[in-house]
Length: 294
Figure: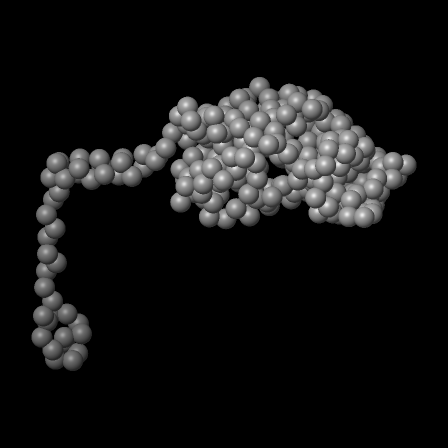
């Protein structure tokens, strides 16, 4: 009898614990096989990395704003192999797609070496956001800031390495970043029809990259307004850091003397990468993306 039984005068009804059967070798092997099936990836994933240069991290926030869609992409289609804020990796590994955010400070040797290493390690380099594409307002940094006063000059990524795809905007919309990630997967891992669809979607963004890193209000006039593509949304005027763009009769008017040629207006304009091939097949593209994320 136990000591509680001696105090309260109750009988000791405790029983010996039942002995569990020892699992046989076949049961162990079967369980291991099930675990291996569960751990096996559901798709042949591509390797994606996020490389952060000099910027406000707004593009990374926009990427995270995909919420469940981002989780689906990381679960089915892409492995995040590099990202200072998202993955615990010290050195840039080999990857299929590198998403580069921010411009590059040329006084910072580490940043210059990192962007060059990114080009060596990545099959496809994507410049994400206005700073990475055109420099944006970082072009007019002159140094003297308390934390790093010697950092004076910032260049868009394309001035230092070859960039394959631009995702313009400040910051780009979460949907645009998501769509490019899905299309990159289809381009690298899809069948022939999926690859053709991905090429059609990515072509205007690739043409932006081929166009170069210089953009200003004059380019907006020539490429968008004078081509009859402007829809008067006002995003260019809202993006201009020096208010060099005003709206007159529903269309933008650029004060060329005030323009600082940062490219913010061009990066923000949704018609700067307008392409009829994409517009005519846009419903099919959206259906493909929605189906991939279900």
